[in-house]
Length: 136
Length: 191
Image 1 (cartoon, rainbow over the protein chains, first blue to last red):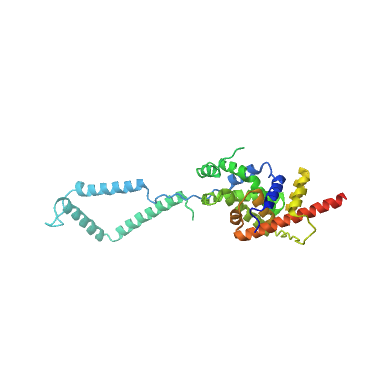
Image 2 (tube, rainbow over the protein chains, first blue to last red):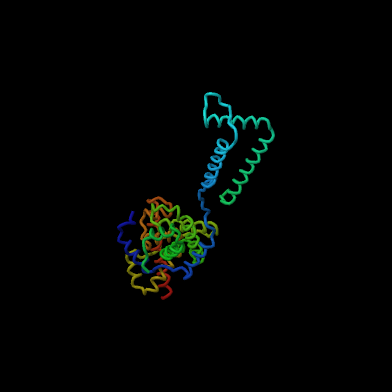
């Protein structure tokens, strides 16, 4: 094939370069930039955890406070746990058994309470996802 | 204007400086426009193709990995965009009569051309390129005007390298034939 290192290549190159190039309209660049500015930007996906750091801290503090209240503030000590457990463990087990026995005596209320908490959590999650405006 | 390396602009664009894309457009617009013009054969369509190609390049810039030169990547977008427009508008694919004519040998033709005035030279070459089929005119200008290698033309057009060589050789021959016809017509008119 004679396309490379052909003496004719130089002649053709010279002729074409001499003819030069056509120029686009003077406002070509500004038209392109206008199109870019008006075009919607590609949706960017930025990861955000569903449960924020503050929510985790709030949950941890709430549970800790609740446990502290149950163990140290509430009056009376439990007898549950027998001789195997002493101090904090026996009180924790005692309170838990009291809680379970109380729950078993009210069969409808715990269900309702659970449903309300679950509903509240789902609503909160839904609002959060809505705020994030994630692509579907 | 002295332009910097393409990668400098691309880095600035990726960092969020959209205005740097304007400099990239300024740097490449002439060559880009001429590639489109050789294929679609009219200024309005060539401007539309080139603008669309630049906008496409802007949106796809994140995918540009720098494996090929930016210009090669851009020319490929323009080539595809121009070919798509040809198909969409159903523009007739220009046929070319390869029939042998009494023509000057290429060396003699070049000598004759060089004797002409600048303006006439430009006129004949541009006319000859405009009568060539778009793909041929594009091959010739990519190789001789834009200094693209056979490998780069292969990347731009999606054709194999040996196929590019064959087409380039044929396109050059057709360019000479077209120039011969134009010169002959001109001489006849003068006589």
